[in-house]
Image (cartoon, rainbow, N blue to C red; front, side, top):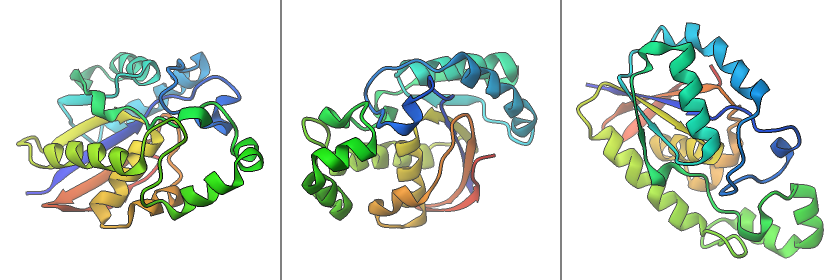
Length: 197
């Protein structure tokens, strides 16, 4: 039987953060971003996850709390450290334009992806490994529908893993704040059935 993953990106963060690399920095969700969560109630009526796994970062936990307010059947929330966003190291909270101007060689290495480690931060291989570990556990569970509240990079990586795409393709997916991505898993592989719902 297929399993369904409901991947919810956290609510938007304060103005200006969307144009910056926000990974391990523990910024809050914005009040406006949390208000946008109201529109998810109608979307979630089509699904029935009884458990939601959540990143430990504040913006994700705030999103989980608001989700339970706008959609009371959301059920139990379990915090999983492995669902945190990648650590961009010294690139945290900087715009891509500023990073490219200051470290063009670093940006070039990032585009090559394999073996890349963010300066003073996390390696993309380590990040992919922990996301793959979570995905394997979720796909092996007995639960038919599972909710996950996490970050854009984690969701993009799960899409690539489930669809059998090279992890470097993760930037091809635009995953918006407070929006739902749906993947139907069939064994080790999946089908992307919804993006930015």
